[in-house]
Length: 214
Image (tube, rainbow, N blue to C red):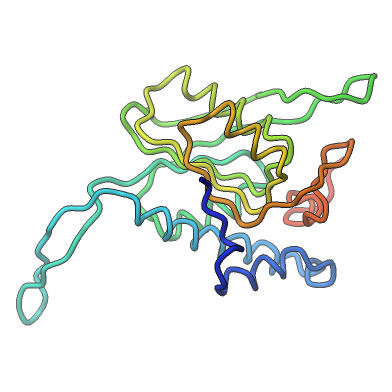
């Protein structure tokens, strides 16, 4: 079962509410900041699933026993909308490697679209934990295509997918095609329009964060 942030009362619901709020969205810097904040929350929650080792830390007055992660994950995101969410996760996994994927919707004369990958750069993901973040999980096609591409090149140890808003249909698509993935979602909306926009959703995350594209 996916982790759904909105199902548990927390400060994260306030950040989600501001991301959806059409008035608050006018403050582009705050929109990016709220994506970063949610990235930090997801990073913290995901970190609870990792393995840890007993460690000793020297302090100015003695030695403290603690638990430290055995490894840092690799953080991946789909350009451009995923950058603030990625930055938030990188604030917490501050020694993590990063991977970046360029994908876009290619619209055909029929009005339908396909997802095309034009670019990706990554460290080796063999036997690594991968966390792929993308703010909007609409149809799920971009995330599935990106993950399939990475899985074709590397033997990934664990796959985590983070999204702020998912459609019910897109979530089902990802679960069907990537059953090994652990899903971390801010909230799930029921409706997906004929043009594959999530309703009520929050609009176009990339445009709201960085300006409208031509």
